[in-house]
Image (cartoon, rainbow, N blue to C red):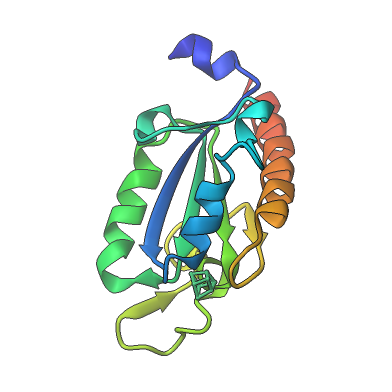
Amino acid sequence: MAARREATSPWLLHFDTGSCNGCDIEVWALLTPRYDIERFGMLNKGNPKHADVLLVTGAVTRKSAERLKRLYDQMPEPKLVIACGDCASTGAPYVGCYNVLGGVDQVIPVDVYIPGCAARPEVLIDGVMVALEKWKVKKEVKA
Ligand code: SF4
């Protein structure tokens, strides 16, 4: 994994903390030939220990909060968190529900907030590009 840390293409981990699946569908659209996020060298990974960027969809429920924190803690530094959509960014429209804590930043630090309900794939790509620049800066600071 040491060589992996030198790479310029971040690997992504997607986690749904309680979405309606609207944002999840848009995230998965990024992997289709139409949007093809892999052209930027980004790969979707299922293992937090291999991931550089955590893409979170949905408001954080009380049940998912601990899992979200555990995934984040397993990711190696430098790491980034992207809140995809209004729910992940603020908890809206579920703020105040008995089982909802709020946005992702109620549990872990967030680097990039992507608005929208659902967040459109074009906006997601913009957000991921912003995250990529932040990730490179974090890597330089760590080096
Ligand atoms: S922002 Fe909208 S589409 Fe995305 S998870 Fe929330 S309610 Fe669903």
